[in-house]
Length: 388
Image (cartoon, rainbow, N blue to C red; front, side, top):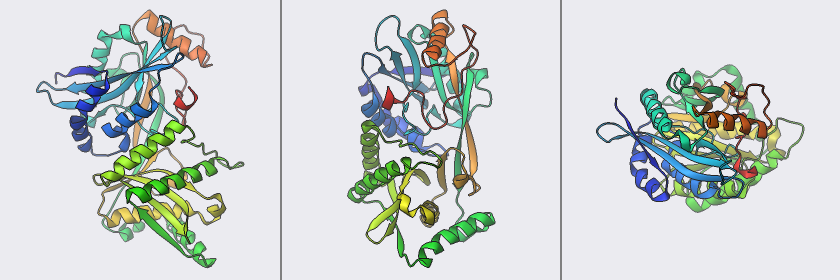
């Protein structure tokens, strides 16, 4: 289908696009907060940079069909290092370049439209390649990205895990392996065995949710400080990250789109996980727990309680978030795989800048025009704004 691409480069244009973008996002079969215009608009407000060494300028691409209907959005920005001057290196990347606060980013469109949308974006960018040196692509679902993005080199693949929900908790338990059933039972019984009364609070009221978020961030920070175990970085260490997630959670709560699952012992919440509601989807976001309660596997109890609550609410899916680890895979979730990688501009400047950027960041190689780049980090964006 013939598609047209228009670049939006200012806040007014971004605001004008939001209603159509929100409708496009609401029609996606799998809902996540990161594809929404609310997430991108707040992210741009809190994380945009305009400094001597790095500068971001807005590049949101609206893709429309011949009738003018919006079929795709590529929420991007042009990042220049240094911020100005003829020698700056210019990377076109998606909004959400942070310390994994944004867990998944990419083009917003129906999966069946993605090849055509990416093709239209490639043709548009080829016409203005004097303005950029390379593109960092994220969230690609097409089987062979290089077939629609000439020059693309694969960086890594990212997996999202989600659980389609049956009508009852018992029906879900029946399809789970024996080990997770036993784990849920033991986690709950271990508290009772030690005479500890507990309650799972589901917090949705905006003021109470804001206080619970403060508690989650404190416990998330405490968990990151534990040594001698699997590292868990403090994703919200930067003030901008804390301000952003507080603003987004408050905005989501105002439209009944946020909830906190909090395990309470006495008057204290000892384990919490933030969730975002979008239609019939619940996205389980970051968590935090008091290390003193770790021996009771309190987060397993919280996640099980959140899933049971979602079933009771008649929801259709619980998204366990991105990344593969046993705490998620043992629920036997379905998987969606996304590809990430790079596409240098088809120009000498683009390829040289792409290569030079790799050298500046410490990546080695012998070719002047490399065909591939090292894999993107698994838990931390290479362009982490907190350290820029």
